[in-house]
Image 1 (tube, rainbow, N blue to C red):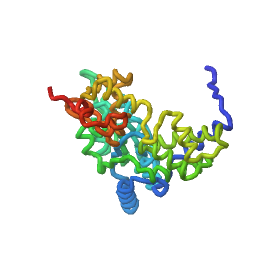
Image 2 (cartoon, rainbow, N blue to C red; image 1 turned 120 degrees about the vertical axis):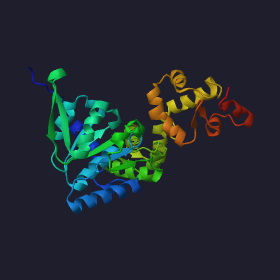
Image 3 (spheres, one colour; image 1 turned 90 degrees about the horizontal axis):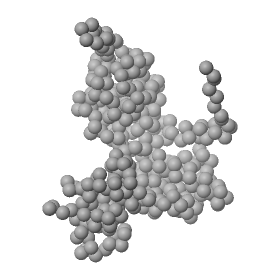
Image 4 (cartoon, one colour; image 1 turned 135 degrees about the vertical axis):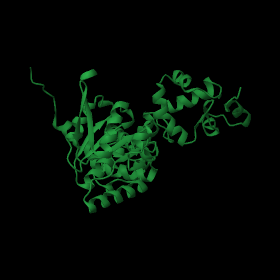
Length: 343
């Protein structure tokens, strides 16, 4: 078989190294989520003092808020090793057994998107998490038999964007559940200050504040926008990121001063004008804007609801007076049509 060859360059290696280093390595480098950090620090300190493995942890919240980063920080703070995978990848009991038997006492198994684990795999996790054993079925039918594998005392850290999708038996086996919330502008600015230093971007505080205000409260988005603004400033503005430069760069991406992008505005406009402000079902709305239902529900709706532009009702999605005003619908009689009909 021919040997696989990959084209690399010094520039690509520098970029990959910079991207990896954007992830904080300690609690001190992780701005925001103070209550969650405090609880995790107590758990880590107590386990270290007793020289015991950490209890199982469940981290939940919207994507891009730092669940994976916190899992790695917890592992490093405890001084153990971590093995990482994701729910959709584990589709056979043998896959799970291979992961678990490869761990050592105190090691962490991190499962991202744990709510997407198949039910059969979840059931194998019950005994693994509680008794540190796993029973594997061999063969099928009349000749079927099982073998019991003893497991090291490991820690399972699960991350999910949909905690409600995790079955109650699995959820109850986590010793602590922590939910991460969206970040404020000041916290995002701190993150961007650190990231700009790592990326070598020349940015003033006005420029970073402008980016933070349009990042939808999400560090991952903030760092992605920082990279774009850095590229824009390099080509058009002598590598200097100011408030004016950041505004121009983000406007080119159709991201306005409220952090709403083109799809956000299309969703609000569709409800206001295509459906006359009436309550709209999610599937109908997805067809109207040409987007997948899951994408609307998981990516766009949370921010629109949090910022007060959209409401979920039993009759469907409706826009608020704030959203109507944004598109020039100001009069009270204009808003009557935006309320859900009960008939």
